[in-house]
Length: 346
Image 1 (cartoon, helix red, strand yellow):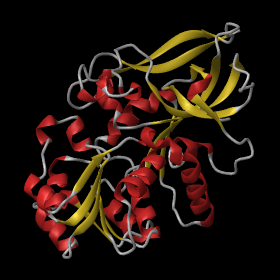
Image 2 (cartoon, rainbow, N blue to C red; image 1 turned 90 degrees about the vertical axis):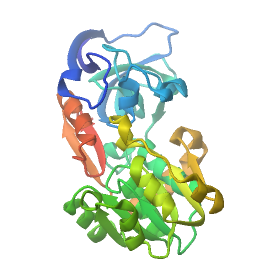
Image 3 (cartoon, helix red, strand yellow; image 1 turned 60 degrees about the vertical axis):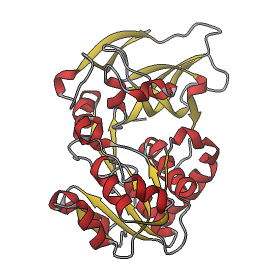
């Protein structure tokens, strides 16, 4: 038996901003059988994560491509792997059987052939939406959790600034920080998002960075007593302004530089005299560095969801064909919360 597998690829290496014409919907037959001894598993993809870091993989060159396996470059025409939730159809791996629900790296497509080591089995009795495992309970959530608690180590009363605060990571960082007794201010790109941060997600304050002509002055206004923790999702001028307003022994979690992914001219650097004399720690990190936290992260965050202490923000599109527009929208700020594409029902 075989199926027609629809999947998304790039048509060429992407330079600058991604466009619809940079992507192609391909169709290829896929046999629903595996070779004995292959350890292969064929899964039906249910939903996939859409993440801005993928743009760096789609370029002809990015320094990130040489760092870890998850960041290697994607050649035009090649399937694009991403975190997703799937259902096992056929398995040569004894740890997985037909109809198991799994989370792991699959493809931007309807079906994937993967190795067992790339997947983690989900509890079939889970009461939470499956999409949560590609978002808040996936790498986006772990990124927020590890970046705040392992890199920044918040203390009660710390003043925390979060950029891209309505994104998949930023909204969770702010909520975790509030639960830790911190004063939290976020920035976002629209008045509606600012209202969401303050009225639904519990941020102490928030502002629209597009309405600010001087980011340094804006942060001085929102943090008259300085910033203790900056969770950086954008890089560029926002990082410069945040460091200029940080207190001695401030901590910066360098999580993303979305402002620079499609426009290298926006690259900027903080005043290193501030970094030195204020003894500011700036640390880059990846969620994959902190898999030892996974169990604690999952149990803590699941409890927060069940008790309503964390409000889950998802932005879901439907169908494989919607993946390119969903991805491109990330760089326009179209999404509110975690961007996910639903491909099929379980």
